[in-house]
Amino acid sequence: MKIKIVFFLGLILLIINSCNLEFNQNLNILEDTEQSISLVQIESEITHRGDLIINGTETFLIEDESYLQQGNIYINDKAKLVIKNSKFYLGRGDIPTIHTSIFVSEEAYLEINNSTLSPEIVEDGEMGGLVVVINLGKIKIIDAPTQIHLLQMSENSQLIMINSEMIYDIGGLLQIEGGKAMLINSTIASLGLKIPSDAKITIDGLTSGICYDSWDVHEMVPSADYDLIMRNSCILEDNFTGEYRHGPYERGWIFFLDSNSNTFIFNSEFRKIFINIIDDSVTFENLKMDVPSYLEYRNILLDNVTMMGQWPFWIQDSNLTLINSEYLFLQPTGNSTVYLKNSHLVEFIPRNFFGKIIFENSYWTNAGEIIGGEPYHSVSNDFLIQGSVKISEDVRTHLQWKNATVTREYEVLVKDNNGYAISKALIRVNDKEIETDKEGYAYFELLLDEANYNDPQLLEVFIEDKSIAQENIDFFTETPIIINYNL
View 1 (cartoon, rainbow, N blue to C red):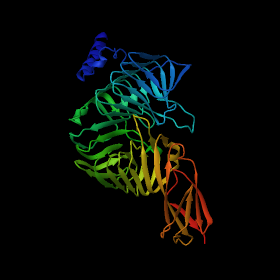
View 2: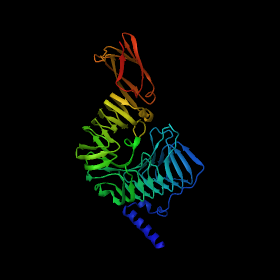
View 3: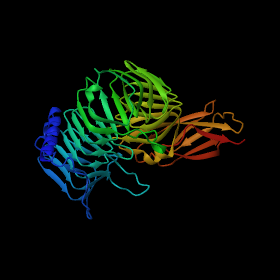
């Protein structure tokens, strides 16, 4: 029996050395790799409110505890956060974003050992958070059933996960943008891979729900400037149903395509494929869910590719037009112009955006963040929204807004009960007055911020000094605002 154990440990050490994950060699990570999770029953709970900041060479140890952290965690310098035999909950506290983050800096270290890591449990009706780990340093996850929504690997970062899982109700994405990662006897909900500018890849017949006995990412992306090895590990099947069927949730495969890559994908199934539009002018049509789609852009070709979650775009100093498309995830930045016609926006996260988004007969559901003053998200946002759009009640519930401004242009149509336009009707909002044109339309703008975006403001309509209508409007008001006047 001793010979078998020594052989097993030697084999695992050989695998780790072959991946050049040097940070594990002196951490005794293999002592209990076959041990199952049996967390101690913990009665008391420690709560820390506000950001948790660990500096210098400090080691912050949480052992045999139930610990609630409300706010971001910053592991700086050469500091360490070690969570052992514990239940660790991460809540938003005063964080403006849905994502509550653990930031692991370049020489820092995070260990989750025989522990759970989950978002804070909140009351029904409250807006909970999502656990995000931004890794620039070193992470070890051993015997840990975590509920991390997103773990993002950056250049020179390192990760080893053994006998663990990263699965959340709507998340569990391991996003690889750099570094070295190894998964042994583990399961993740979703895998996101960066496809670099010099990539030349062809993929045919890729689907979710895959388990690998042994797999190296370079088998799929030969030019990848990062390492990922999976041993006896799985990516969950993308089998969401009901309200999670489509939208900003994480399962199966996700790609992040550099716009200069040579990427050809056929007969495959993805949750999302991010496409960067930089300094360009592009139009896409008929991007749908659950049906084979076709998209061609530069040297990127998607043919008979079925999207299960979203069509996501990063738009930098560009003009992007989307027609007859659905479940769009837009991240505009710079002085971009985005135009949606007969389309559906499901997630909107502007990042340092100073351009405009124009809607025509479109609608916006589910989620959004309009955030400034957060360097890891957006330093500033100040943009214009125009056109005809219907915004759902769930956006009113879920939208996060802080330290940012939006100018919203409102379109008002005044007509009689026979459907004929009424010109020269007076529209009054606050101190502003405008008259409808010969087509019955009038346009006005409101400057909105976190203090007033959901506060009703009174719109009044007058014909020959007679008030014919009053409506309360805010950021979420459907446009055009149609006023029917009974003659």
